[in-house]
Amino acid sequence: MLTLNALRRNWKPILLLMLVSPLLAEVFSGSMPASDYFQPGIFLPFTIFVYGLPILVLRELAAHRRVGLLGLWGLGIIYGLFNEGLISETLYHPLDPANPAYDSYGLVAGLRIPWTLFILPWHGVFSLVTPVVLIDFLFPGQAGRPWLPKKATWVLAIVTGGLAVARFVFWGENRTVQESGVFALQAAIVLGIGVLAYLLADRLPRPLYIASDRRPVLWKPFAAGAALYAAWFVGTELLVSIVRPPWPITALYTVAAVTVGLWLISRRREIRPTTAAAFVLGIGTAQAAVTVLLNGLLVADTFRAASGAVFITIYLITLSKVGAQRRTADYPE
Image (cartoon, rainbow, N blue to C red):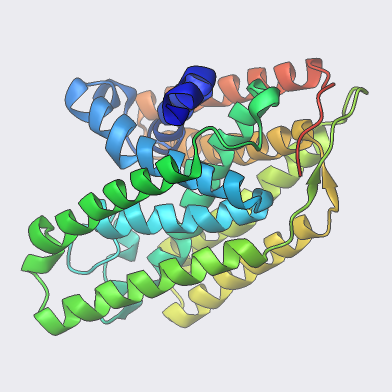
């Protein structure tokens, strides 16, 4: 009964989160054309199982545990393991990588270390933090509060995670190409990273969400988000694709960039919802400009370049809406 009541109260943000997360992570990143994504055979599994339910579970864990935005990002690393480790299996060599530049670069026990260090923080930002921040902004009365009872959250977590683990262990492609010992070691490493991410989420600083009735200045958090994307993700991509240094150098760069980014964000004792929204919109706009638009122009892919221009426009329109809306409701800690 409690679960049904919670669904009646919160079905709109729940549904929107399940729809927006895969759209931002797959389509707006240029990973998948919209024409492919909206086919029923892709749209429904991605919306429900690959993104929807696990993203909802992690959002609920963050709300129940009050871990804040940085803790939410830490839980997003767990989602990266779910997606790239258990479902698409891009972390493991010799399976097909999402980016060919990472194929055999930096292998340890068959794990692509530079790719792992790149894609897990990426999922934390784009698959979890960005959609949660934007939907919290749209639904301020439900922002930061649990949408489901704790028991329902854990049931969903066990079912979703159990199905993913079963798929990986019994029907996954990686199990067919690895020796049993290597496969077990890889599974143990992925599990260990997940446990560390869960513990990290509880220990990261928790800036206070506050409301403001004055018109916010958004260009600074927007520019900071764009700069963070350039340092974290474009910098790593350039090292891997062009410079190709020994892989520990790339790994150290990525870890240092992530650490500095987290430190700069953690210095803020208070964060306004408008500031958080502008920040993630800056990150998304930078990705659309570089990964989608610029790459499309460089490889003479007109559709990709046009898609990048469309995504940038959508992000900027959303930013203008954020700037025009004044916040009056308090957000919980």
